[in-house]
Amino acid sequence: MQSWASMKAMAAVSAPAAPSRMLCNASCCKPSGMPQGVRMIMARGISSSREAAAVLQQSQHRCSFVARDSDLKVIGFNLLSSSTSRRARQEDVVEARATTAAGGGAESAGEVEAADSGTGVETAATQQQADVDGSSTSEWGKTLRLGSLFGLWYLFNIYFNIYNKQVLKVFPFPITITNLQFAVGGVIVLLMWVTGLHKKPSSISRKQLLAILPLACVHTLGNLFTNMSLGKVAVSFTHTIKAMEPFFSVLLSAAFLGEVPNPLVVATLVPIVGGVALASLTEASFNWAGFLSAMASNVTFQSRNVLSKKLMVKKEGSLDNINLFSIITLMSFFLLTPATLLVEGVRFTPSYLQAAGLDVKVVATRALLAGICFHSYQQVSYMILAKVTPVTHSVGNCVKRVIVIVTSVLFFRTPVSTVNALGTGIALTGVFAYSQVKSKKGDKKIK
Image (tube, rainbow, N blue to C red; front, side, top):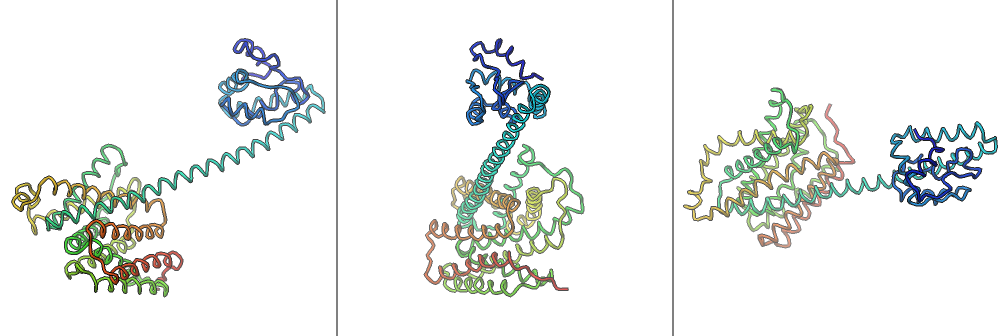
């Protein structure tokens, strides 16, 4: 450890251009000669010459010591580089205080203590301001990242619905398309694990797999029914019907979990059901196959939520939300493959597409992009859920549905009547109200 008195020799060797007054003889700095401003530099752990110069200017010590950049390389920069630890920097301050107390008299000792006390106050204030600034920057960073995730969630969902609808219009085999999307998702999962983008599960017990299996079954059926509906009716109408998810959530939770819904929660279901009914009566693309498929999708997806609570899958070790979704994706592919071969056969081949008069490259590219967007938007959704509350996620999902409906209407030029738009708006307003009430009024458990 270098004492302050040794700086004179260092200055002579390292900085010939340094001023002659490397040691200060003012009463506030005697007998060590360590200026108050330098003590502040050491106490704060400053390693930048620019910051050090600012501290010296603001220290207002009662002496004429002034340091230039060349001096800071000696008294600040070199000193801090040779005393990297906080404890080492504090020892220099303690050494100066001890020296003063030993030979500087009561007056000098009191002045140094007062100077150190002032330094401590300034240091604390500066540190507090730095913490506030750092916290503010950190919060902005988190908000920006979260906003980016929401943007990606919406973007992937928009493109999935567009590409998926384009493929299903010319290739009306929803089981094959759904299984292809699970296959693409499976490839993404394996690449993610192999490349280390996300840590793969270290070990999964048989008990965990058996608990995940029912979730994979309803996940498979939910996505299959959604694609069946998208193949039969307009994208906007499918998502309007899917706004009824809260209704089935309350119904199934009451039936299987014994949760009695709060009256306000029930009240929010009225505009949801009424809005969907109003939109259905005036929907130009309405047919029962598409309507019932979307309803079946609602039931299966909300059954997944009920099963999650009922089974309580233990996410031990590296089995986080992303890995849980990844395993469900792989299981869904293997579950749906036999049904695909049995019901629709091997249809997605170049020869079959050419025989149907389709452009193989265009259809295959759109199907691939739909598969990538399908897996991506669901994975991003899980990532968002890990960062926000379920209520915030629910509100975001409501906004997403509005964006998907509007963009699909504009892209596909879907005819929408005033009554149809009113019904959709009422239903989505009910969904938003439901999420707000649900966050404040919990359901009671039947005893």
